[in-house]
Structure formats: structure tokens, C-alpha cells
Image (cartoon, rainbow, N blue to C red; front, side):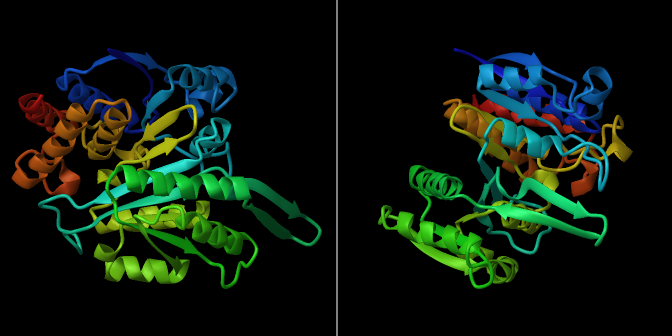
Length: 338
């Protein structure tokens, strides 16, 4: 079977880490047909006067799966985040961020294995903002719906059950935000009753942050609203080596976009210094989603072996290998397993 997948390299280091990732995927023996599109973000504005051109959305809808590199987002001004718009336009409501320790990395903990499930389309990121020039007051509305809450919480529980996880923790601020977080917590408590094979608890978001940096081994699957999930997923990434080594995926009912969650690092673009681990681990998630479990396991195991061995790592994790040298070493390890 040949899988047709939309490829969005992004900008900055995006094209380099994408090339490395495709090299590793080629070593799995899985057959792909790549539908490649370059015009995202600033490139899209320049060519189509649109940071997220419609033909890219059409491609993802048609193929059902996309693999995406990082895209630069202007801070404070400029065009809206392409990442946020892509998730909202395609209704990719579930952001899934596994954070699993890698051997050989100098991190605060060596036994982290947890997943953040973040509602991806509403909350404060719904983009409902206003500015009153007269009073010089800016405001934003956090829109939380019953439908949006139910589907991300149920997605988390279903994922946990399917993948043999044991515990779901719901993170909230219901002690202060009694309507938005309060509803989210109430819905979670009710849905948890349908999954008596899974343990369930909840944590107030500030306590959740403290718990993660003190006892991350006590947590498994964590589900929360958009802004809280954005913060927690980066915090959890910091426990296992940073954004350069963790995977990310966005799921909707009709399609999925698998993306590296780190930045575009334009300062090192084109120098073969970038670490492609995040996108390669993301590609392993994509393989699993496509039903290619053997290949997915081969990639995941090869990454762990490469870090355990430590001889061909990129400079950010203590090595001296280039982006493609790391990918070539990984591809050999994958080929041995497939």
C-alpha cells in the first residue's frame, strides 16, 4: 500500500529537518507518495498574499495526513500563527504531545513517560480579542464549549485505553474560573465514569506544574484546555531534553497533521546544525496512525539506540554530527529492524 501524505517543510531549519526525516522514512520500506507544498507563512504571503493558502488546506483534506516542519510566527505583530489557523481551519481539535525520556540525555529525570492532550481549537486561542483605544484596554475571551470539552476529554480516554495507559489527569483552574474550567472539570468527571478500567484524578493547573517538575513519574495522560495545554506540553518537554526531541500531532475527525513543535531557528538555518529528532519521532507517530506499526516501532527504537550509543548526535545534545549525518546513522538502524 502506498500512503499519499502532504509534506509542509516550513521555513528556517524546516527544510533541513524534513529532508532528514524523509531519509529515515525511506529506510523503513514503507511506500509513500509525497504531496509537497512550500508556501506557508511568509513564503505564502509573498506568493499568494496568504500565509495559509487554500490549496494547502485542500491537500491536507484530500490526503488526510500531513507531516509539517516549523513555521516562523511573528511576535506581537504580523500575520496570525499558521499553526493555530491550520488547526482551526481543519478542526484538528486534539493536540497530542508525548514526552518520553531518551537514554544518554542529561535531564532532571530519566523515567518520564507521559502524554499531554490539549484542546486545540478554542479557549483563549479562539482569537476573540478586542482593544479599546479610548481606555487603552485589551481583552480576550476564553470560549470553552461543551462539545469541544467532551471530544478532547473522550479522545484522551480512548487513546489511553487503546494504548494501555493507566491514568488520566484533568488539569484545570475551576477554583477561580468557575464557568469555563468548572464546566471542563464537570464534563471530565462524568466521562471518567464510563471508563472504569482507567484511573482518574484532577489537578489545579498551578499545582499541576509543580507536580510535573517534582514527581513526573506519577503522571500518565494529562488532558486540559488550550492555553494550559500549551504551557504544560512545553514544560513536560523540558523534563526530557527540550522541544528539539519531542514529537507532536494534531488530530481531527477527518485528518491529522503531524508536526515538530520547536521553532524555526532561522539563525542556524542552512548550516546542517539542526537536530531532526523531534520531527523523526513525530514521523513515528504518523507511521503508527497509518497502521504501519512495525515501521513505527523501528523508528522509535532506532532513535533510542542512537541516543544510548551517543556517537552520532547533533551539537545541541552534545555531539558533533550534522543533521544528515545523524539521519544517515538513524536510517541504518531502522533498516536493520525492517
